[in-house]
Image (cartoon, rainbow over all chains, first blue to last red):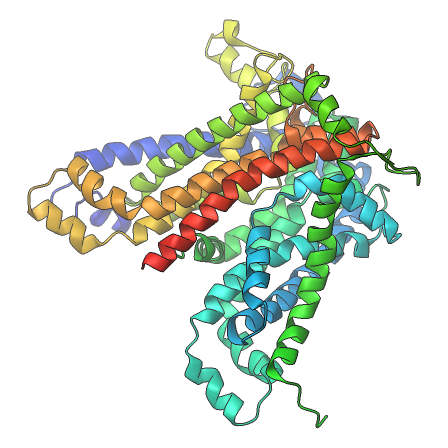
Length: 288
Length: 295
């Protein structure tokens, strides 16, 4: 067991520290509690309803009831909601990142009259709860005639994504040495060219981190979708799940299959791109 | 194109798309909500009446649900500022030690953060199911039948039951921020204090804790802000019930406007929540900025 060969020791010491062993055992126990909901959901999603009611909650399913998944897919209209979520997310996430990066570049690298005030306006937005504006947002989108449309949800998503992304990218761009862009400026390059040829390429790791974070946030968003996407043909995954729960909540197997299918995409993305999550979150928060 | 734009002109062109969409769909609704809070309006017809502070007066003096929502929001925020950060802090300190399996453990604790809050609500609703849910099944298996509850159906229990779900979802967030903060703790300083004979607790108290102060401030402020806007989890788990016992300000503002059709009263509640948030955010932003300047 290689992982254990040097574990449990304080730096520079050879002997095993018993306190660390106890700590480790405690962590494993807490981890077991943390994972229990997932296990319970997956187990239930593979049980027939009669088994759910007749067997212990912890017992693994004896015969795998895959029909729960196909049943939930059809009744939950997943083919519609998955498609809507996918289209909205694929348009919103890259587009939002691009306009945020452009704005962050202008605010950090070009001396603009009123630039400071604009930056403060953005900073303020990072803390604003959009949950308090659901009704005026509905009125506004309704005024444009965009209720139940993808554009009608993408525009507010873009608006509420801008502050955090501009804030993070502004911090990153500000640290880039002046020499890098000045040489290009002297050579007659425009800011558009410098942004595209120099700043976008060097900020790829930050952009990747923001991309992943924003993918999950957009994929999971519920409150704005609830007021803007009212027709069930326009629903996204979270709205579909909510409706599934209220209609078929005693159909335990299918309900849990619907949960698994809703949660799976974000989970997979997270497990693959884990390190980007951490860097995306912490680059903003632990700057000072 | 041979026409060269001046540098500021180029800058404003780069700014334009983001600021246009931000102004129209984020800043304008915020101003609109303030204006609407002085109107009587059902959200549909053209008939808008100016009523001065009438909506505020109604909300403060006659709307009993509003005060219930205020109490719940305060309690929820207090609990959110204490428990998830404290648990996240303890886990981060433990995961920062030399123990096997640190990365998978960290990944596991963080996993609930990436799950849609509405799915967390659905998951926990099912676990709280009075007949076949995990909680009551566990209690039965342990022979603790007398502790069995209708977790989300009992007005004395529902808010706390919901909070446990929220803890499960949010601990990972504090944990990751604290772990990042711990990277900034100088290992040389930790070892030096060890060599000088400081015990575990003293090293923690005099070396680790001071270095973590910025992380602690950030986690606490973000916890307050996030808990004030609790919406999805309440909507999905209880809808504010039973008997409004889990009602919160964000959801009650939404309910007044979108479900009861009174946009004015809904807006007044929104403004109250907005002012509370601003009262917390502004001092924090000042503090970070003075902190930056001091360096």
